[in-house]
Image 1 (cartoon, rainbow, N blue to C red):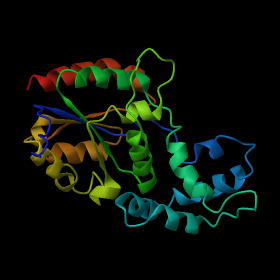
Image 2: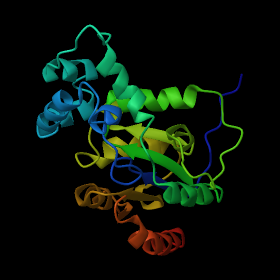
Image 3: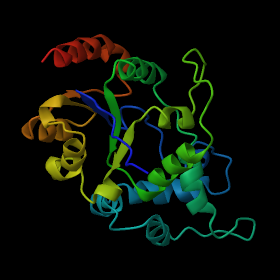
Image 4: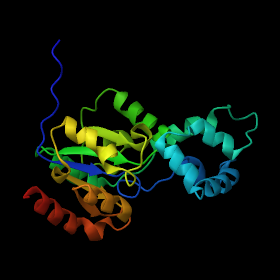
Length: 239
């Protein structure tokens, strides 16, 4: 069989996940439920974990696995929980994350105009596993943008491709050429053909230094930034 042709795009938008499309944490069904038997224990352990920037970055780069992280947490499970409970919840709770419905709607409209939409996230093995699970299911026959809530699965199927730091083995800020470069080259694109939507200034600056365009935006302040998003995309498309 002849090789499948790659999609042909003149432009691509790289979209961050945490802080832009969603702000929900890992283990949200436990951390957001004060009645859960593990709530107090996991809340304290997660707070300590995410203060350890070096360890978190190693997890994001794929140098440390979710199982190794769980060993570090030293959470004590009684016999009412299976041994893999917290590991399984890492993946399952990713699929409970709420997403910015309005931004997804905008990106769908942009995608219909022939612009690639690629998720570019500094993220962990469990998140990538959740995405693979969501995309491995039978394609959705309808994806109404009028629904009151938008599922993780619907959001996952928005993306033409995914770049995740645990697979790229580097964070976005550390080496943009390594993180994005191979994907851009494979699709006959340059950094100047790409726009990054990210909540962190350091990621936006690194992307601009590589020759790309960026727009710093956050999930929390999206309503204030929505009109600027349209203006920036129109300006970028005309370049």
